[in-house]
Amino acid sequence: MLFDGEEFTMSNLIGRAQNILLTPKTEWPVIAAEPETTAGLYTKYILILSALGPIAMFLKSTLIGISVPFVGAFKVGIGVGLGQLALTYCLGLVGVFVIALIINALAPTFAAQKDSVQSLKAAAYASTAAWVAGIAQILPWGIGVLIGIAGGIYSIYLLYLGLQFTMKAPAEKAAGYTAVTIIAAIILYWVISIVVGGIIGNGMISAMSGATSSVTPSGSFEKGSTGAAIEEWAKNVEKAGKQVENSAQQNGAPSAAAIGALVGAVAAGGKGVDALPTDQMKTFLPETLGGLPRTNVTASRNAAMGFQVAEASADYADASGKSLRLEVNDAGGAKGVIALANWAGVEEEREWQGGYEKTYRADGRMIHERWDSSSGSGEYSLVVGDRFAVEVSGSAASMDELKAAMTNGVNLAGLETIAREAKPAG
Image (cartoon, rainbow, N blue to C red; front, side, top):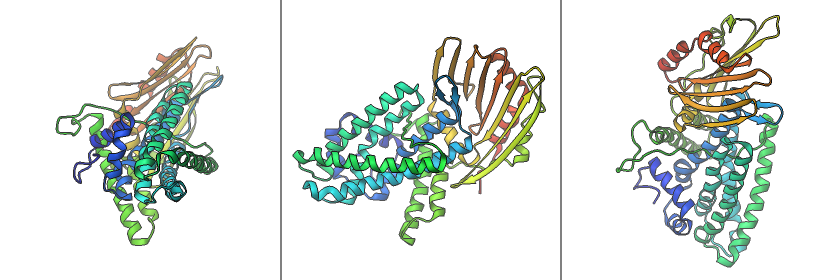
């Protein structure tokens, strides 16, 4: 069973995910027999697993960067990345529900039994493989694509099995039922990708990130472990999900404020704070960096979908053509996203002739390095206090020079203090 009585724990959720992936033929009958509600499926399973996918892509696109052949690593600004995260997450939630509607509507055609809750079970639990496989987007592109395809294929198989138990589809009709559902789902997600691309200039993201940790005999995660941190985050998301449910019951549909609070809870993990004002952000851009004078400064603060973010940047250059760029991003109301990345311990490393790129943790911080000796340029970035993303990039004699520019030029201790002493927003 996924739940022990009415109590929800992350260990039970992970146990369910493992069972549906490893022993689906015995797990689907259990799932089909469980008393459940639409709200329960969302708050205790769908909200959590589907949120981690956009979070994984956010980390890749803003902190690590997406490698473009012959060009280098492309990164989007944290504001754009968070907007992408929020929009994709919301559309993903809607997508699961619409697929469930498709499954339910097609039931009579394939001699199955219509049931809205059972159809949502089929859509949600069959998606587990694709969601989990999405963690591969953190890996190099080729490997990530292969794993993602494998996850998608396995999800189709899971749906084929699940329809026979949740919708009571005859075995001889289950394959056709699955095929028609998948075709409809492909069309649905194609439309969603166009919507997302039209708004933020990027295609549809389908990713899933997870983390494992040791579990105590009582069934809860050890204090301070990755699982315990994510479990706390999930409870805050569940609380916000219940607010959405209550709003829908009272008004016939969730209010914009309730949806905004839900997205804010996903992004902030219950610990969101107001992003720094632009004037304060600019104080972390020194007049000189690595011996180079500052040539320009920009700063902005934005609020949308229940959370605030801020960013500031400056360019430094001299007459010889040497240049550096410093960027300071304040996740503010979305600091829970950064914290999840730190808890998950995302790491990556690759090398090529004359260069390397790696993401790792040191002294409690997530750090990313990229160096290309052929161009004499690179980038060095780190996360401060599970809130601020700071990056120095440009031309240098070595990676050590970029690190020194960061360490000696940026007031990292000041950012640590702000992150440590900040009080929750509102």
